[in-house]
Amino acid sequence: MGEGRKLPLNEVSFYANGDEVASGIYLQAKAEQLRVPGDLAIIGQENQPVGIGLGLTTVDHQLTKIGEQACSLMIKKSNGKIETPYRIIERDSV
Image (cartoon, rainbow, N blue to C red; front, side):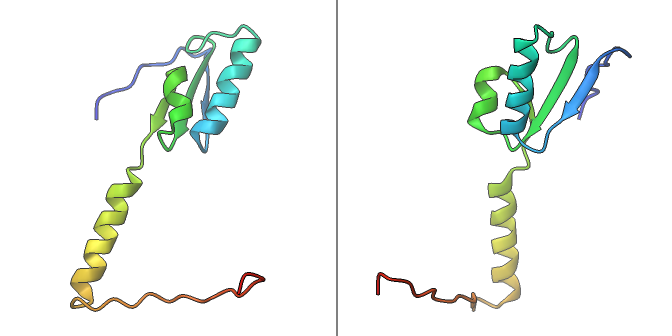
């Protein structure tokens, strides 16, 4: 991982809990005529499509890859036998 862009001391940074939140911050900043980056630096999470069009920096946790690794480990440790708990929630359709 390389060194990121060094922020000026007067620049405010937001690290949002998702790209949707980061997009809202970005759009509000633009509505108030703030420069992104420049006046604000914004980073989201989850690499969602909403952030792509706006050019938002994001943290991609690669959840599909994590799920694949977790499943692979589970299969390996279970000797090929996997039982997953479930319950049926009966409502008006049955």
